[in-house]
Length: 185
Image 1 (cartoon, one colour):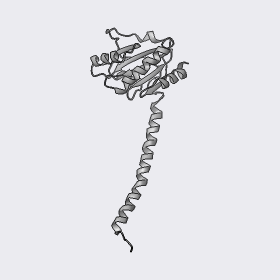
Image 2 (cartoon, rainbow, N blue to C red):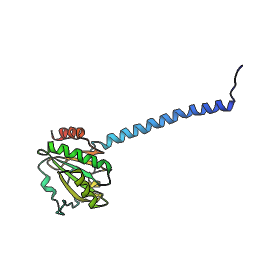
Image 3 (cartoon, rainbow, N blue to C red):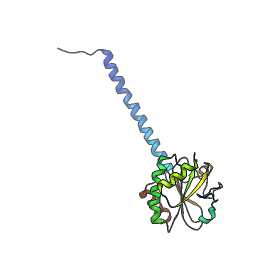
């Protein structure tokens, strides 16, 4: 006894099989685009600015305007964060750990940017217990000046204020140490 399937069922199976190839090609292209973007975003030079010289006025926790000229003469790591940025919370703790090791050779600065609430920003600093310099008042213009396309965003600044490198997304201790060695080691 032979069982014959209706023609319609065979055609449905063929259609399913013929859809697999375009879907696979589409996924491949998507993965390729993600890899290209990641390579561009991570450790990428910017055409916007080769020097870190903020035009935005930033203040410390007591409201005193910070003078960026005092950062020149030594390497600096500048990390942009906001209280609403979940990955920023983790990264701030990682930076704090690394700053305890590199702090005598490199200055670490956190800049609160695109904040919805200054009180929330200060609460985040308190929760993460960071001891490196934290500045407030970044309205997003400074992020644009340094070529950032998102947060968290980290700059590696040479002693002459030229930008050695940029990093988009969360930096862990291992990656941060690698970049510090690469740029300032």
